[in-house]
Image 1 (cartoon, rainbow, N blue to C red):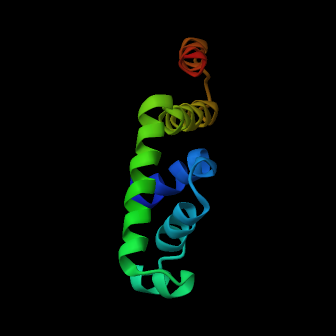
Image 2 (cartoon, rainbow, N blue to C red; image 1 turned 180 degrees about the horizontal axis):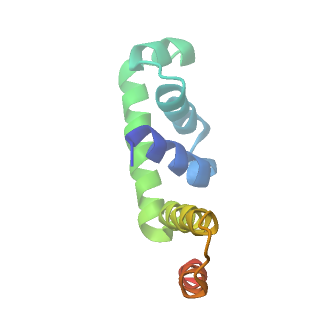
Length: 107
């Protein structure tokens, strides 16, 4: 998955667990596409502080994902839903295939 999408998903699921400053730095960099220098100027902190906040935030987000797997589960569910849509678009539905997809959704 693309880095920006991954970071956005991690922020969606776990962003509330970060400090306000960590969250601000990541959002400004990954979603608003600001450079470290621009973020530093915007927040009134050093470039190094922006970098440190982002590094720590990413470590935390990745640690949360390693433990909770919420982004991975979401991604799997989205893939199964796409398969459901594909199956439903076919002129003849396969009950076995739909049952298999339901089983995947159930875990």
